[in-house]
Structures are given as structure tokens and as C-alpha cells.
Image 1 (cartoon, rainbow, N blue to C red):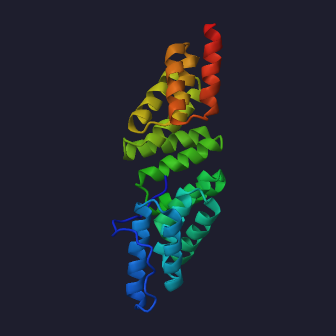
Image 2 (cartoon, helix red, strand yellow; image 1 turned 45 degrees about the vertical axis):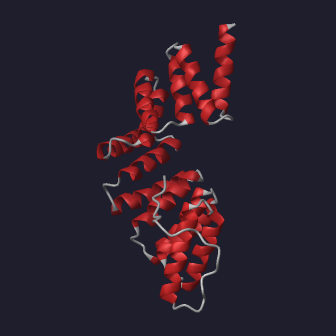
Length: 244
């Protein structure tokens, strides 16, 4: 997850901000309007307002960060990365710039780049638990299981209620054939945040133990959250054939 920096604001208003206002007042109104549009779910309008704010104050690392966060939320990853690049250029020790850019690289499956950025974020904020979870996932997706496990456990040591760290460590247990341990971790994560892929992974662990009914139940729950999840579709089909 990216580190977001949104704030409470007045209602979103489509009326233009008066360009005759002093820059400081105009910037504040644009910021308030942009945050209000974020809260209202109007991503494109908020992007336009943050862009106008950047035009007024091109040195505002916060404006680039906030616009990058919106781009990341709507999965426009290249645009998000470009904005985070500006944040880091303007403020090289800006923790959120490194952390959010690493998160964007992770979403884009650029695992080496994600590892580099998240490692820099951890240097700046060594007790930020979510950075370890995201770096652990980057290691995991790159096939470096031991480094991933260390990061997941560090994240959970800092903060016990981190579903991503539980999901990631559960995947490692599953890959090593430790199905009971995988189920325990995946269950801990699911109890904190129901997730279709985690449910499908837990179902696969139940399958590995020969517990077909529990596996089928989890695959069905996964599909209720994500109807096109192939792993769950295939699992239900496979278990249904076994019953015939």
C-alpha cells in the first residue's frame, strides 16, 4: 500500500479558483478543492486541480506527491512514477517519495527498482512496518524467499496487524509444503482484511492437506470477492470433478 497524505476538506466544487488571488491563497484553495474531490471519488478532477497547483507552485513536492498518489490509486503507474521522481528530485530525503515510488514499482512488477526504493525508505524510516511488508513482497516476487521472510517477520515485529506480511509469509510456508503454518498465517491476514487471492492460497493449502470441503468453501469465498479469479475458478472445477 502507498502512504497517502490526504486531508479533510470542504465539498468538491467545480467552480474555477480565481486566478487573480495571491499565489499563497490560490494554492491553499486549490489544495482544499483537490482533497475534497479525492474524498468525493472524483479522481480526474483532483488530478486537474493538483496539476493547476503545480503550475502555481512548481517547487511543491507535496503537490507532486498527492497527484502521484491519485495516479497510483487509478493504476496510471507511469504517471505516478513520474510524479514521485519529482518528489525525490525536489526533496531527496523525502521518505514518502521513496516509499510510494517503491510501491508503484512493485505494482508495476519492477521488483529490482522496488527493492532499491523501499530499502532507501527503510534507511530514512527504519521503524515503518509497511515498508518491510512491501519490500518483503518485492523479494518474494523475485524468488528470494529467505530475504522476504526476514522482512515479513520484521514488519510483524514492528506492528502485529499487517495483513500483507501475513499473506506473504503464508505464501512462503505454502511453497515449502508447510500447509498448516501457511493456513495459520493466511487466516491471520484474512481476519484483518478479507482478500480473494489470500483465500485462494488458503484453499490450495487445505487441498494440500486433503481437506476438500474447506478448500471448496475458500475458493467460493474468493470468487465472491473477485469473480474472475482463475485460481479459484480452477480450484472449484478441480474439486467438483473429484466429487463425481
